[in-house]
Amino acid sequence: MAVFEATIGSDWTADDTFSYLAVFSNAEQWDPGVLEGEQLDPGPVRVGSRFRLVVPFLGRKLRLVYQVTEFSAGDRRIVLDAASRLLRATDRIAVRPGPARAGAAVSYQAEVTLAGPLRLLDPVLGRGFRAVGERAAAGLAGALASGDTAARTP
Image 1 (tube, helix red, strand yellow):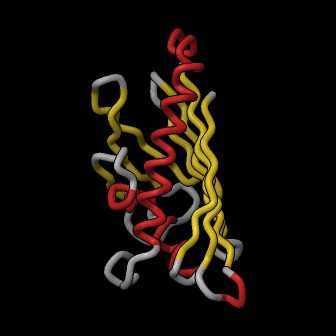
Image 2: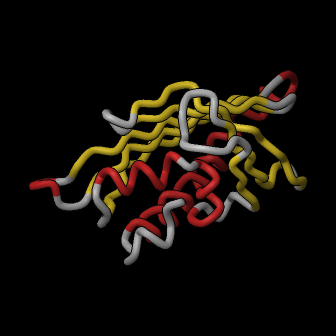
């Protein structure tokens, strides 16, 4: 299993930051490792909402459908899970207000476990996944430091 954890600052309010990140298809805007993102279910995000992300994997395009398995708007926490015949992924996001309610801090954890015989590649995956995670964290930091949230939130 490969795990990446990061804490990222946001210039946005905690509520705006959480609203943006809860729409997981927005990852296409900030994660250079996401080629496409689409919300599959209409309406507000809730437990059961699904998002399709297309990511590069072993030289191919891998389509992953993430489903919200835990959601708490009040606590600003969301957990999403995806599974394919190649891997299983879990992303955990929590947002808390910054000092004196200025800005916010995002706690992000992503786990990937390879399936079947690919598990032999777990040690290699761990090193590569760290680099992918660091690029995503940098992209997210850049997005959350930029101006108008209204243009980014659905």
